[in-house]
Image (cartoon, rainbow, N blue to C red):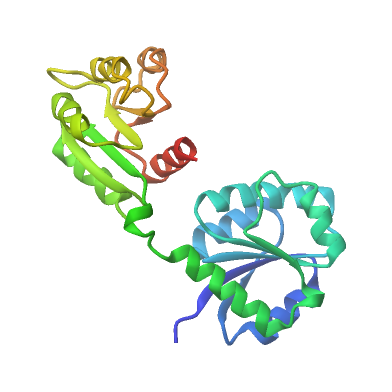
Length: 252
């Protein structure tokens, strides 16, 4: 049987102890203090499938650390479940800037029901999206290797089409639509700026968000890229996590 790996934190020790006693049937359980550096280290080393926060009445500093960590972990599509007393959960809600996946008062939910709900939350989060529900991303670059790498990075979450060069991309958009364009800034024949200008001249494509890809890290060049007001830019070689995070922000 395969167990889901869970990272547990918080100051509600009785709840954490109960979770360990009764949850071993469902989970591989790990614990961390609420210090930001401890949470970061556990995330990096253990790669949990969910974070369980067992709250009591935490200090302000602990809640601030936890909130910062929740902001990071939710961007990685790892569900966050808040458990605790009604007072503890409500106090945490006063600090949050990123809503947890799920929160409830543990007093009113039998343990087995709680564990089954957590399993369902984790497994729902790991399901591949239905193809018909995926957002479409068009990647435009003159380097086939770059296109291959980006497509492999995104294909589980998005419907990805690739185009070698700007002319091919514009031809594609004459008959098809897309939700987002990843556009190489420097290409032969038709560069990224020229493609963007043509997109903005056409009512059918003017509102499509564009993220520039550029291998030039010179601050002046980056400033030049941003002057065309794209929705963002990604430096090459592409960092997969940075790419996913930027796309997610644009497509919200």
